[in-house]
Length: 324
Image (tube, rainbow, N blue to C red; front, side, top):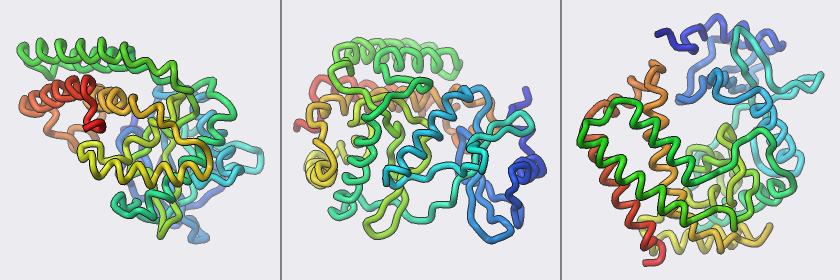
């Protein structure tokens, strides 16, 4: 079966960029991205750009546009984000050859150091400013986090993939069933849902010194604020994560009250991410980029390890490691 991205040839990429009046000085260079196709280039005036071709049929046009509008809202409010280029007519989302695409200014920088208190404090400030703006409106076309049902949907994709042996299927069904029941006991309803980045890990934060910028809002959604915070904490090391949390929360509270009441959601959110990550890999296996990047997915040992990890996570839901 031919994958949709196979039609995205170098010539198509350049012609798409030129169709909106930007002219690459050379062939765009592919960056390390799997869900979409993301490339870096310089134009004929030596300005750096990143072009993102969205995975067909993943998001609706309205959902992508809502992401773009949110980014410009954040930028206008002084939040350090990278917003897509807006043409004179106001367009940020473009179409060519069956693909939706957008251009973003290149953002240079490095990931923050999570053992650096000054970096953590600065990150807290960035997230506090982000969430201050995020709480002013809601998304209409983006999804809303629903822990138990999202895990159920993800586990069904894994079972459908055919990667698991008969024994592994039984073990996986058992542990994910327990996780879903446990997550039903951790409803997100008491927490206020706001417009979150959704995938706020170190790879999506760039900067220098103590000035950090958030990039790649492709997974933005309605979720509790803690969704944008917990991945920055070393929750496997209670002493370290408490120190990190202290610095992040102090910076955050320069902008708005820190969501301490949502700390109980860290383990449920970790469970959610673990299940969804393997489901994402399995669901994307028809994309040639995935077998090349994740060849171990087809190994039985990977799934044995993943099931053990989910079993351990089920126990953590009962006794969260951050309370140790």
